[in-house]
Length: 437
Image (cartoon, rainbow, N blue to C red; front, side):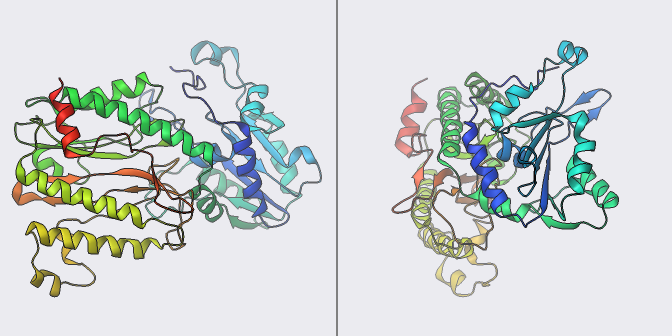
């Protein structure tokens, strides 16, 4: 069993979490109380569990990376000490021996900047007291546009129990507030994401020296995880895609169990996490160390779209309009490659443009504490938002697909800052590095 609070990453200063809480509380209705729960530790079978992963919202507001923690925000409390309260699990002798000691009250306060820390055992009594003083509960439901949750979470159980116990209270939603706040990153958050990208770069450079014909996809995955763990990441930010040959045309291929063959392309959609912040990189490389003329032609078309799409990301841009413009860029490239002709474009269905035959997914998504991070897509882009840029061209009839992806920060003025600017992407650099075994 691991010690759930043996931090391998450098935490952000508590000032970040203080600011996050202040911003959240400034959006709350009067006489309201917001509650945030940690994630469960999920069982597998028998006595096995999945590794604990903290709920990103309580982490965003407190910096606490420990199970069975609860955060209460009650800005209108008459008692100043009860405007921010953190409940943490108390260590006992058994836990200390088998898992390692949990957070002390002092450590929890230092990490979060919250002065009032109680043991979890005290939660019921204190919550009942505060519930009698407020009119509205802010509940934290999952309203992400990609959410598909079948499991009842710790948060769900708490919400159901509280609604039954306090039926006369009003209910408000935390999620829309968090969607706006979390989508615009603080400087310190972007620095954590830069570390995640830098670790991803180390992994990518490692595999450029490793990949050869007949290597197995899972061996490449192992090289990545070795480098990630070595540099204080907890591992992959998401399930890695190591897709060689025709597998590169499967958008969410995660089996990673095929052998790489001479002449194949290898699509790598891989990112390290650092301090719970994600990176999300895609590179496509030649297994043999050199692109064919056709592979190079398509590769440079994708790279051209990526570079032009990146330049479109500016404050005030709407996500849907951005994707329409990227579609035009991709259409031009597909015409140049001979994959589309003018008749295809002239006769296209506006709801499913011709380019979608070869580029069927979106170009960008928010990234941060979640790989597909919070952000209200109907609101204009803002400076300090971080997006992926990931165009691709997939040609099953030619046996390969190419996707390229970087993570960029929108700037107040000028082009976005590329957090992956140091990760090789040009054809010549990749070929050169792959020759240096």
